[in-house]
Image 1 (tube, rainbow, N blue to C red):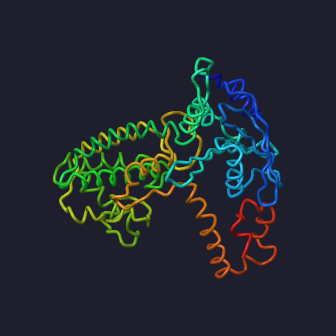
Image 2 (cartoon, one colour):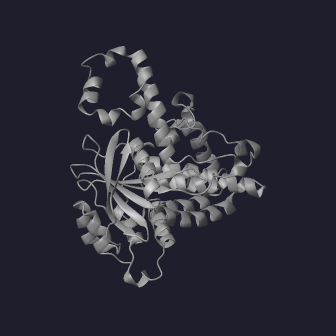
Image 3 (cartoon, rainbow, N blue to C red):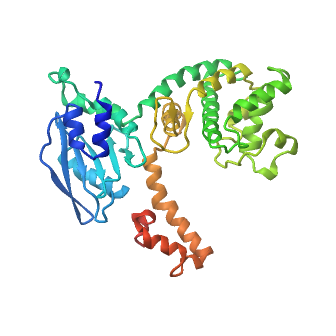
Length: 401
């Protein structure tokens, strides 16, 4: 269904959520609101709209006037599920400066996954949210045949995966299949497919960091290095771009500290960081098959595909349908790496966010206090930051013990 985007954008910025759903998207008027209690505080969730038993709910601010923190939002969702199993919660602050749209994926046999999309009218256009709202609009022509499952599936399509990510992935599958055909020196089909995924994951990661200028200050680092190799060595002469440059970039550059790099390669490499994550270390497939090669044409084709997209390393809302952010890597990892037979699983952002906030950050504070005790003394800069905005720095796990 085509929606009136300017009208939706206006209502979105004014926090007119009921108007968005009932006047612009074809949802029904609200049902009764209800109250949940989390950590001793009551939250009266207002029903914004409903459709075939699916509730759209607005959650009020926390006691400090801000949006409830992540851990509290999860607890609120669990309480809400007892009264309204199928729902979407929109968290708002008292100043009407922030919204967080939360939808929860519940799939049999899989852990619960929280999908959250923040919107700040002062700094964002709302295009990312509007893109999702288009998928949950229902014209009169579908009313008669619409059931609960239809509304649930529409919500899942809108909020579980970004439409842009899906579009990228559909094209990525074709490029993956074509790239696979270029790989030489790996006779085992399964290993060749595995290596194609590894190479594309490496190259996509590099596209994200080169966009930030982290590779010799060049936002077209890979493309320009490919041209440089062709000019120096000729196309597929003696050593291909893959063997002459890429493998060395992976293993001797990104996978090795600066002091350990050879001087002759440093001149070709330029200034690139050491990335201690394992992705660029010598892979077991590269150890098993020492004669792997990939002709230059494979990279001309692949870079042409990548160049058709804008690569953003942050989580900014996407402004058009040719932009991708790290979510696309997660989606592709799930499709190509999340396989039982490989013994590898992709840990989604809601889980890693929770783990980081509740383990890594407290550990860093403890380690810092041991090394720099002066930073934790009264009236230090650290305590002034905590005093001015405690909720920004102190996560629930840090308030005990």
